[in-house]
Image (cartoon, rainbow, N blue to C red; front, top):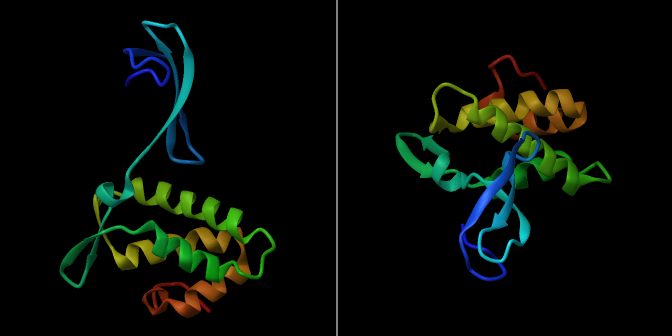
Amino acid sequence: MVCVYCGGETKVTNSRWQKRSNQVWRRRQCLACHSVFTTHEQIELKSALLVDRSGQTQAFLPDLLLKDLMLALKHRSDVYTASGEVMATIIHRLLGLPQKPVYKATDISEAAATVLKRFDKQAYLRYVAEHPSTQGRGFRV
C-alpha cells in the first residue's frame, strides 16, 4: 500500500482481525515521510461469496440480505444498526461453512433465520414467514 500523504511505500506496524465487522484493522507507517495512518481491509463479498440459485451461480449481493433484515427488524428503533450487525454475524457464519465459496440460497436463509432467532424473536418470526425456503427445515412460524 502507498502512503496517503506522500505516495511512498508503507509497512504494517500492527494488525488485528475485527471479528464483529469481518475486517482487518492495520496500523501503517510510511517509509519515506514516517506518517502513521490506519486502514480497514474488508472482504469484497461479491467475489468471495457466490450463490447457487437453481443451477446458476450468481454473485452474492449483500444489499438484498440487508433489505430482508431491515424488513424483519422494522419494529425496532435501531433498525439500521441492528440490521448491519446481524448481517455481519450472518456473513461471518457463512464464511465459516465448509461449502465455501458457493452457497445455496437456502443456506443463506437458514443462517439468517438462526441468527435472528437468537437476536430478536419477533424479527425471526417475520423473516421465517417471508422465506418459504426456511419452512419445513426445523424453523417454525
